[in-house]
Length: 223
Image (cartoon, rainbow, N blue to C red; front, side, top):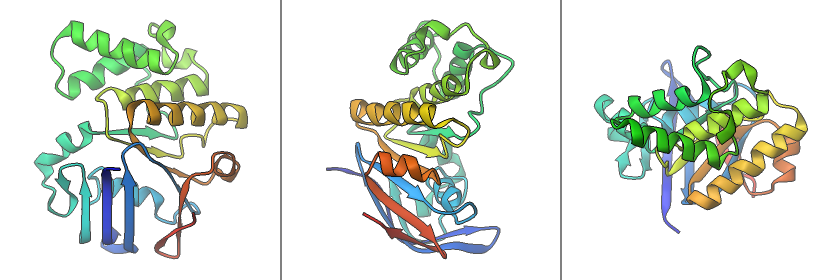
């Protein structure tokens, strides 16, 4: 299997303080990995390092063709085109329709032709089963539907890696299970690696896979 992400002896820093030390991480194409740990343990800081919001200051890190240790500010937009991000609170633009939310991201990431933008947006809504709801406003959708939209948004540029930060955190157990099944299906269909930060332990038990525990400033592989 081809490696999508590797970190070796990585130190993760925030505001000058080391949050995590000696991080060893490998994620292969199409692999689903859980990142578990208490709130404030450093899960989000690790995700932010992978998408370029926090610089990697110690050790080695690679994602796709990018050397995270040598990442320049001007490289970050290109890096983020290859990464899809799914947030706990959906982060949809509430003043425009669902399909306009997707148009916005496509235009921001360099898509030019209206026809191509529309076709790609529709294709991603189909992937998550929401092609009929493109004209709705976000507030007209349930929490689960809004999270499906945010997954569609994460898929727009055919990412090699999807980072999901507590994607089931605002959802009831039944909807959480639906969202997990969708993420797993997308990972298989698109051969996209997924790193999902969560403290939803029932979900972790329900979908056993490679699991990393963040605790006391280190990352430990559980299985």
